[in-house]
Amino acid sequence: MSDQPTHEQQRALCSVVARAIVEIRSLARDSGNRQIEDLADAIHNLPRDMFEQDAWNPELARGALRDYADRYSRSGYLSEFDRIMAG
Image (cartoon, rainbow, N blue to C red):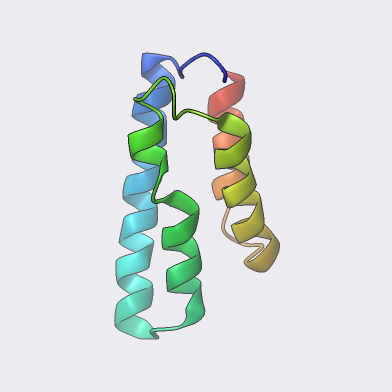
């Protein structure tokens, strides 16, 4: 496993999750399509895992976001994750 994210990275990642949840809500209201499930699947472990030493795996977290980005190229979550984790 890797070192835990810094406090600043944790706060920024929580902002990503909050934004994603808002998008999930909007998508659910507007369409009910498969993208809702895919986005929730991509981010649902992030808040828990980043605070648990034995659970944190940035490669796994990035992989989930990469899979989402591969399906929905306009998302931007992968590049945001990379920017946060580079800091």
